[in-house]
Image: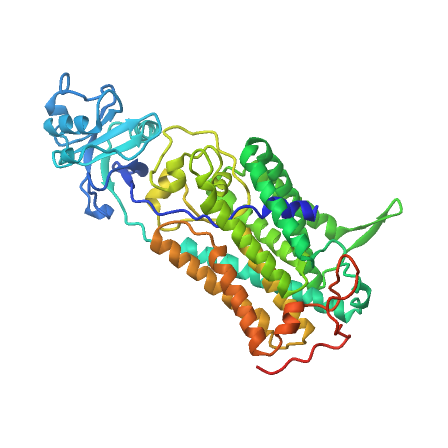
Length: 535
């Protein structure tokens, strides 16, 4: 089960949302009520105030019975000084705007019952239109009429969207805490294993029950090849395999959440409450905990497409999954860490930057698998905002990312929840190196945990660099491009400074060759820790 999870879930890299400047807010109010709706506008055509208190309210006139492609049949007395709502179609946005402007309208709202994109026109037409112009969903206007009746006041404004959103800080906190806890857990388990005298039993390189150990470069290569094959399968058979992925995620995340919480309860000394039924032993604590974890996983599966709150459960399950993965999968040496992280970095760069040259639509395999085949090319590239006019059937996406909604982007969230996202792989892959450093601190009996803390700091700096480049370039970044060099170089530098580079490179004394089962290290470590030289 663990091996299957590895091949399935380490396939998506860091792809974060971009800040858009094409959404705005329509504020509808009456004497006692107010409500806000999503609108799309062209900021180079229709400049809008940034704050609600800087706007002027105008009465709303319902002209959705006409397209307003010409002034015939419309009385200027009805339109003058009001915000006019007309239907989309039959003529260009600029033609509608010029007609409304000639009739004395102060604002033009175009109701759309098809997918909306920001209105545009020829550059020469921009200067002719002097009134605000925006698109809104027809169903939103119907909702406003139901709530407010004919006594509506409309105000349009476009609050600024900061490049730096609070969701980035939350994402940074989630990633560093998960990596640090996973590394600490791995080191604590290694210390417990050594203290219990299990090292001698593991001389044949058999890990603890349920654990996965990578100790051979050949196995690492096969592991990465299987991941690549899984990504290709997802690309060609997405509509089928996505449901297999969802099922595996439910099982794996529930198991991981159970293991994480059970470890905490064990540390706190909570009683198991053992009892016997028909000569079979049961633990009351385990039964209750399993029921809770399975319930959380099932709730996520049922409501996985509910953006407003389900991201909390997905992040909870994701954190547990990453922690359990880092704890369960162990790398035997820094040599294996270098090989694995380097191959995964090449894998990441290849599938993000190289595959667009080979795909028929020019979209990378990684991006298409991450966003799903239903996302348009322009939407994938972040160049165009598209807002569906009617509720659509949600597109299934891979549950392999942490998601945190934008906090400050009110207009964007009205049009559809916007998220900062971080792939599980950008936590797990460097986390495996952090876990190795934590275990090496145990092997050399380092009370200051110098390797563990230095690798965690390097990971934090790598994540900060990733977010900084993303914000400056306004483009999503493959995080491993920065995390792998930061963590590998820092760990190697610490080992060289302390004069332990040979031990750090070769790792544990029970690393073996598959062919001969002989120790790779001639100076096989005894039960005593390696003598560390002071830095």
